[in-house]
Image (cartoon, rainbow, N blue to C red; front, side, top):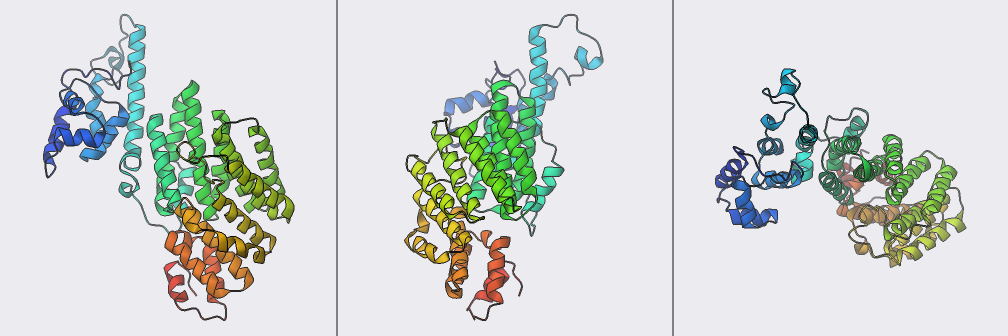
Length: 453
């Protein structure tokens, strides 16, 4: 039986703390209300407050969030140090005296105690991000969302291992920030998430370790996405670590996402052929995997590869890859279970990549019908909608239509204000500022997005 679900020992004061915090709320929170907030029954809350059971770590963190209790305080009360034979001053281990006999159960208790301290450290470090969301995390404003990420990659914070459930929850929140283009919050959260992912996979063995490696790979791929958007060289570090973790996981989906992220770093460095080769090689590795997740990742890699080969002018290959991705995407039902895939090969997103390909090939006129037929509201996230409007702005800019370029840039800001502050978008704004065309509101837009003319 896990130490986190065992019957509570005499004297545990978890119930008293919970009752105190319930009573301190205005209006007072009843047991029924707490049970509803936690998704449990009233009788379950009664048993916890009566000292009959001790919830698992994940549930304790949920209780801490609902009752506004610091996670480390609640977990310490639930699993007090005096129960830990490694810390107990009365135990033979702490006094330097060897016990007369050491049974398998004693070893198990010691291992549980060590594991509990590790989970406590991790839970305290990740509490704000994983339980209450990014709004409670300590965010220090920065001109560049990758400042904290770069520091975290090379000087990671001290965070202990957490449960796989907690790690998955933290990753889910970080991914939501990316999809809503909340890059400042994401840049602040990622260092703690990455450190926890590394600590957790180092702490586990067997299949649990493989799952932790997969989550770490997704987290580092997400870090690479943020670094790439801000044109940060940290993309190389994040992508390399993502690929290493993905290979250790033995799972195809994180491998495909990591390879796609590394190819983006290679493409930005001008290594277009090498980036395309990496994607083609990884695609072959996943070709025999018939799971929907693997197909979704293959489609995402094909879209990225199509845009990549357009950089060296291979029009036929670029458009064929986008077409193939769309064919695969038509057989995929995107929803829960595929949220790890950053790029989804829906009809709209494939159209967005055709737009990108035509822009890169230098044939923006061919992209005009794509823009006019696309419905931006069908894109699943603010980040993808902003990306579409950014490519539309590039298209109109190449054509020489400043008015429509500016309209597309304003659409970017409307969908995701932080997208409008990205280096590539600011470059378009700067070009408009120094053009001969007078556009009402342009200078105000430039000032809001950090462009100074």
